[in-house]
Image 1 (cartoon, rainbow, N blue to C red):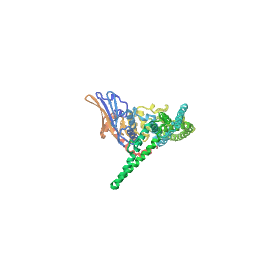
Image 2 (image 1 turned 90 degrees about the horizontal axis):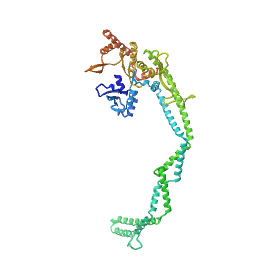
Image 3 (image 1 turned 30 degrees about the horizontal axis):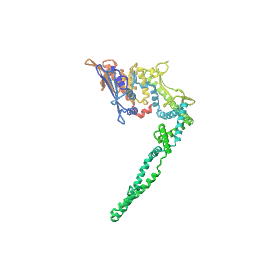
Image 4 (image 1 turned 180 degrees about the vertical axis):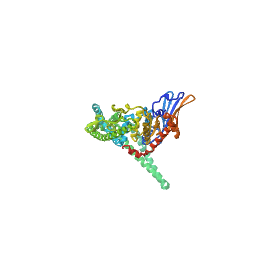
Length: 558
């Protein structure tokens, strides 16, 4: 029930049978502390999905609510999320080993990452990623240049027509506004002449004698009078200056109006030219932009694109050269990575086989298989070309054979149940620093083994706690004796209803009694045997030095 509950909050399948009969819903919640190195990836995921406000979150809370009608709700830190998001976070937090489907080590793409972290290849992979991303950009440009030739020629013809049409127009910035102003003057020439003549008459007086004195004469007379006033009263000196200025301004205005009126003309030919020019500009605006500036910009852009098309063969050859150089570079880096993978993979295989021998799987074969796929468009490795991606040219998969005479097969197709748990235990012990998952849960790891091997399994599981939190569900006392903390899961009937409870066994007497029950015997003999199991486990644990993070990293390639 504990494993099922954990699987549920990690994004596993929900089953309405998990809801207690008569209840509306079942709720499971788990709080996980974030530990390095998975903390970095989990924090990035939480921030990307806006599931935390903390810059450096220390915990994450996962919960799942399952209703009796079959509806399920997943939450992270109290925020509703999709089951996919819950599963993505769960994959980084916990691995469950046993009959569970929640086992990342059965996922072949995960094998490559495990091997590369174990072999300290992540920096080389990052360098390779940079080169492959550059290659992808080059290839995108090549595809663009190699589009259908007829389509490219049609595009070139359209661009050429646009450039020629815009160039022929010889547009000038703001030309349309100036033409509209000129057109307006021609269209209103009669009114302009009339108004300017009337203004001139008021300033200068008319020949018909209707005005006794012109405005200019009146202002000149005013200037003389104010000048005389200022001679009598010096306080009026400024007024005299103003009057004199007004008189001069009136004379200037009269001359400019006269010049303007003299130049007013009505030229129907010029008006037609203006109308035709404005119509040309309007036509260009409909095709290429809503202003002369936009039309000119379109013309320049079209000229550049046309130039690219006309010189595409030259550019294509240059890109092909760059592509080949990058493929050679990718091949060289990939070959170096592959060489390290092969060497470290052989070391890894030997260590896993040795681990399995201690777990009564002496005849099991294990191999880290590396395969390359030929590809005529692939990277160059010597005189051959191979398919590649940002990880290199290798397809990596863990292979095994459980019995002599059987061929090596993919891990996921061979192992199951307790056998799978023991294989995973061996892999975890070897890959402990390469695997970012902090919490490991083992179920049925004791299947098919006896007390002697159970003691070995228990010791190996306990050693995994250097760098991991390890939870084990077991019925084997020799294995259980190695735990640092014990829980007893039992069922009891309360008011005719069955309930499950988990008890913490805090003291030695409780632990000894439970181990004795697991031995299946009664009396002082079983109590003594249980105590011996506990003492022997403690003795062996005391002999194992606890390593710090630096020491653990140094030992992984021994």
